[in-house]
Length: 138
Image (tube, rainbow, N blue to C red):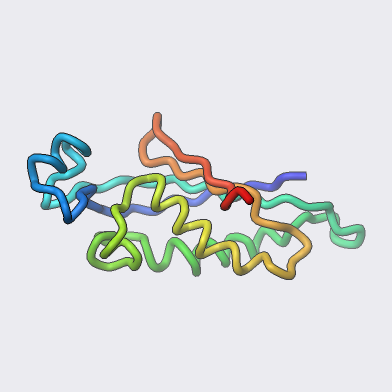
């Protein structure tokens, strides 16, 4: 069974590879390479999967899931300039793909010994653009 919790946060970023020229970055990332940055109102959906507990009837405590997401993702990323205020984006280009991977990496440790496991992170950068990430494939 899958359970999904949705949250939103706002952040700004610049998509630019430091080893490339400004012209090369603009050709690669378009307006997202503006050195002054631009922002998004991100929507994050975190999905866990598991079997409902026979006593509680829950796959995972939804209040606890919200706390984990707020602690691991929203608090450190909300209203931040990702490139300058949130590691690893001082050295990793904060594309939607890379942000989704970082969110997974921040959340996954919370589910090591739990009944449920982290199944998917879906990050909407805009209404019509999102990334799904389900962890490394082995």
